[in-house]
Length: 359
Image 1 (cartoon, rainbow, N blue to C red):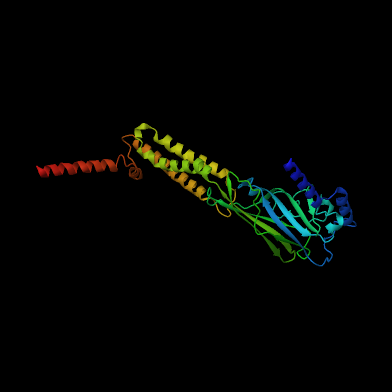
Image 2 (spheres, rainbow, N blue to C red):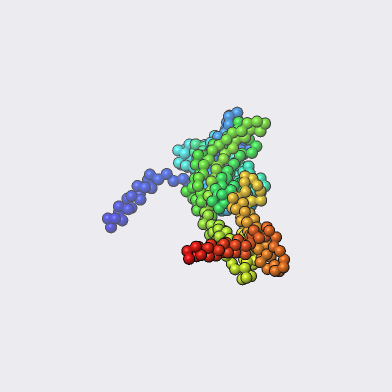
């Protein structure tokens, strides 16, 4: 009984000091501040001054990075805030209404565009987002979606490569003297979800002003990602290394086994298959550079081809008719029938000479 009484007293006191806003009060504020409001003009009284728009980027995940197409897909949101001098009120005069939430189409907006989209130009987001208005005239707008931007891949050290992609946004139609973007120094990662293939290394934001015939105010966000190499090491690099170790073992097979040629061709075709697998994940360009693993595979294919050619000559010399003379350059290659035989004969003569001298 005592606990219920205390709870009732506390609840009564909280209602006494609670500043609740009713629907009618919110509608009154809305009708008051939006009287004669126009979305066509910048929301400052002195149109000669620039409007500063603060912008921050909330990175949610790294969906994918297509090295062949050079496109990165990032789900994320852009948070923008600015002062609208026409949308302000005194909360004490309107039942302590602390903010208004209205559709974004009701107010002036600094629509932002990605300067390097993978497809056609369109402002980021759509018209379904809401805008929050505070009594001081501060506007907070969140917009975003799946952001697909072009990004030049650098696969030099594949699969241990790191990619640096920059998202550059601009408010088209306004010069820096009218609208100026101010980017936050850090990308917000409170909603970030890790990716199985790519690891987020760093992310920073900064703004940039350009001059010339068409001055612009840019907000840039650098996203640096690093590939997780375990899959490619197991499925590509290690098999290639083992094939390289197998390549010289062809000369340990007996010539009479008849397996030398098939062994050489199998290894050569295996290198060709891995060359195709690596080529499928590489960009079809020479800039900034071709991956070292591609050069390595090309070298192993060349060596394997030379090994196959040498095996052909060795087999041709071994199976030649007895009355046919072996060319000198083939004799140099066939160690098993020439140098080794001569060495064995020399060793036998040396042993016999030593035994005669001892006797």
